[in-house]
Image 1 (cartoon, rainbow, N blue to C red):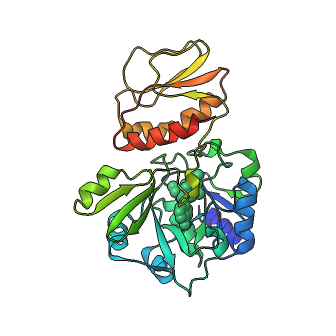
Image 2: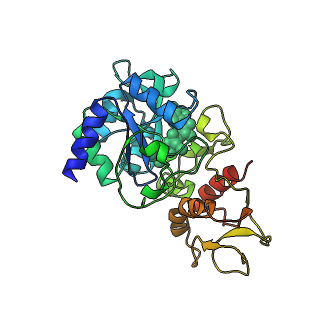
Length: 308
Ligand code: TXA
Ligand code: MG
């Protein structure tokens, strides 16, 4: 592994890209202070330059060096970092983070991941890593090495870190005047935040906003049409099921969690979408998923994936 970390470091220092595991999904990373590396990310992913990239840091101190942090940010940081929280923070004027990764505004999404390989790479370099999820824009995120497209792999030094332990992206949050605003649902649930900070107001964005451009409607899409909340499966449709019920597919089916566990379902979701995308069916039917906790995030992804 030491050799892999060294190669990742060298690749990043030369302004090239890596694909690396995180606890949420795989990331396509480049030096966040290098405009050419950032341009490569946008070009390779075919991502509109208006959609900002998240910066990944080795530790909280490195974030503090670059950003202004208010009291509520600090509470969230202490509770959820390292981990799947992305905080939108205001850059200090002294920061070397390149403004092209945030559409030339000084608000930048920041996170300290908990994945060991990601942290080893971040500790080996002296700049943050700008990294969106390692998938083509609007396509399904990657939670395993074999989900990565050949196009991405052939243009980046790629590290196989096994299966992502969470399987859904980070929760994106911006704090305003003592209020927490959730810009993207993710692996940290509204309920978890509420339990940790019962006195702080939580506002949920309408998830289609101009504030967080990655929340454009179509996203996470397989190549096949998806129907969600189904009560019956049509002929030639594949099925993504949840829990125990009478739904059946005559083609192929996967169960996100037989025992109805939303954590297990979160880990499986993108893998099943990738698997079914390759199967010979006319579309994908998805069973109803309870709309609470991680189920809310799963439903958010499914709604976007089902938009044509
Ligand atoms: O779990 C994750 O967050 C993964 C791993 C690799 O860290 N990354 C990820 O990045 O999902 P990406 O680029 O696929 O999604 C980032 C989301 C987008 O919806 C983007 O619009 C939003 O975060 N975002 C990033 N920076 C922002 C900013 N400055 N203001 C508002 N939204 C921002
Ligand atoms: Mg993404």
